[in-house]
Image 1 (cartoon, rainbow, N blue to C red):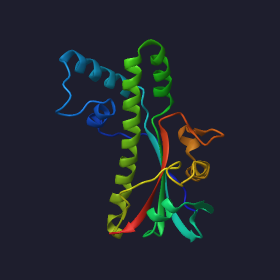
Image 2: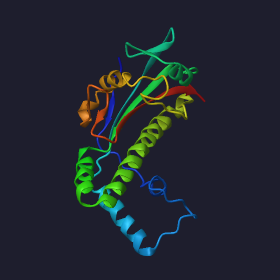
Image 3: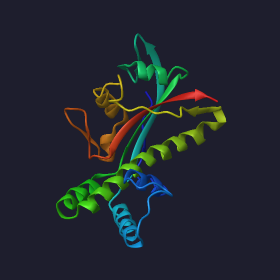
Length: 204
């Protein structure tokens, strides 16, 4: 069984346009005063001080099973998963987190400055999402010489028939406790702004 790769410090370009979109602002449509934009920009910069992007990833073989697939010795029953992996012999499991410091700060802000809390939340969400892209880019570059790449789509537990209960299996396979991520009895990852995803490996 392959071992996960850990990324203890992920550095990405700030996804500013996506952050503004998450906040409800549309490019070339929404007009912001200079004062309001300056305030938002400051909060975005402040949020970055608390974000600690980390990740883990594992490429391993899959085995087709009735109504599902076996990954790392665990059987995942899901039509959605089977559809994603229909052209794949290998799968990439990955997990990311924005860290606990940003979530602690958001909770503090909720009591003192709701605007700041909302912006911090948007920054953390988009930074974590962009960390997935960073990881997939990392593996896509490495697989080029083998004429392979990852599927453009990725799925996460809780989507359609890909049960949230599989989060625990993916959590264990990725060993993301090592990057500070925990899991609850209801299969939610802690701290918030932590997530896992599955992608297929396909031939180019």
